[in-house]
Image (tube, rainbow, N blue to C red; front, side):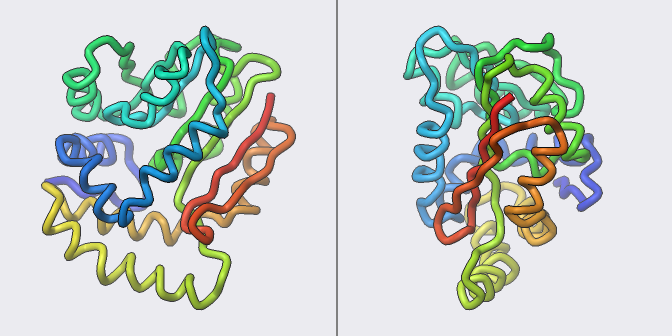
Length: 229
C-alpha cells in the first residue's frame, strides 16, 4: 500500500488515491462524522452552477462532488490525476466526461470554464501556487473559483480537540473502514501543515484572483474560499 509524503510527489499521491478509490467516499463520510455531505452542499451553493455553464471540478475523484453541478444542468468536467479514482468514477457515472489531468498543467485551453472548483484536493497538489495560476488560466474573464479545503479551527479549545482527533482517533478509525489506512495518516499530517485561511487568501490574490473571500464551515475545520477573474 502507498502513503504519500508531505513533499507530495505526484506519483506517490496518485498511487495513494488509486489504493483507496473503491471506499473513498464511504471512508470520508465516516471520518467526517457525516459532515462531508454538508460541505458538498455548501460548495454547490457557492459555485451556483447554471444550465449550459461549463464547470471544472478538479481533484474530482469519483465525481461525487460533480453531481450537484450536473444536476443543475451545467456541463461539468471531473478531472483528477488518480487513474484509479477516474476508473471507479467512470463505472458509477459512465456518461460523465472524466479527464485525467495534473493540477499544475491542466489539459484545457485558456478561458474555458465559467467556474472552477476543487474540494479537498488543493492540499495534495505539489505546487499550490502553480495550481491556483492554472485554475485562473482556464477560467473565463468574470468567472469564479471555489475552493473547499480542510483548514484551521478558529476557537483555540476546539482546535486542540480537533488536532487530537486527527492524530489519535483518525488512524484507528481509518484502519477499520479504509483499504489503505496509512493514507489517512498522511491526510492528518497534511491538514496540520496547510496554510491558515488568511494565508490561502493571499495566495489566491497572488495568482491573480480578485474579490477573494472565505467562509468557515464547522468552526473552521473546513474553509470555503472564493474569488473571481
